[in-house]
Length: 318
Image 1: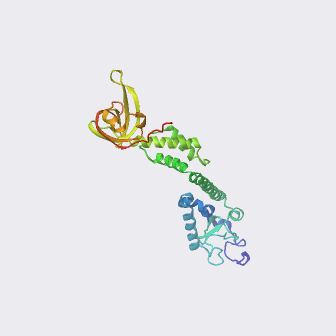
Image 2 (image 1 turned 120 degrees about the horizontal axis):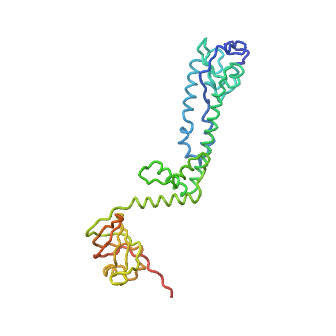
Image 3 (image 1 turned 45 degrees about the horizontal axis):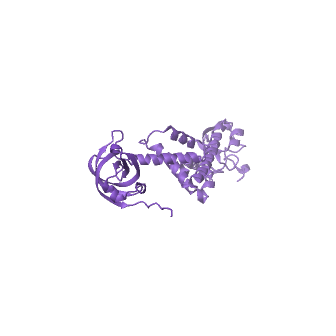
């Protein structure tokens, strides 16, 4: 239906601008900002975040469409089928819609920015400018999220570093680190797409150190059976200047013991201490916990030694 055939109050011929008041504005198609990203198969991880990116925009648009349909003119009304998608004054299709109330009839009238400024005399363009600004910001957020997703998914180490940052943001039991906080602050910046290789390395190294620390347990005391892996073996000066071999053994329960090689250990592991590292061993010894580190103990009188696994023997040159 053309504008010349209309007889309702909203036509140019019958228009009385003073009969209208501005009541609201909305984005008629906020989902358009997401279509380009949802259509890409490798961006499927973004789909779950679309609602958060849009905020309440779809709900606001649907709310106004319903109100316009319920309270609009029936004779010659442009929006009987478009649900608020056209200007009720000129008929143009609208993305950003200003809603006016026709005071004499309590009708709600959707109009575009041009008609709002030129016909109705309402100085409310800032509402539509705000909607456009929100749309631009939404597209920028989605573009950044797509780029970050591509970088994160390109390498398992990248994904692990980002996961560690997220864990630290929510786990209050982890120790405070100004270094990690500085990386997290950089990652939160709007323009940051990726972390540097050095930052990824540092985050993963700190993650592993914290995991090792959490796995530690206080060493018991008294006569205890130890089962664990020999971490290292070194020669040290012993009683009356004799050279002794000292073993560091990490028990499966999370504590570490330092034990002198006894005859029983030597017979079980062999007498070349260079081959001890990596061997799994079980023995019974008397433990005394360290005063400086509760996860470390000194072992004495090691007996009942058995070996479950031996490290490969070194290959000697011919």
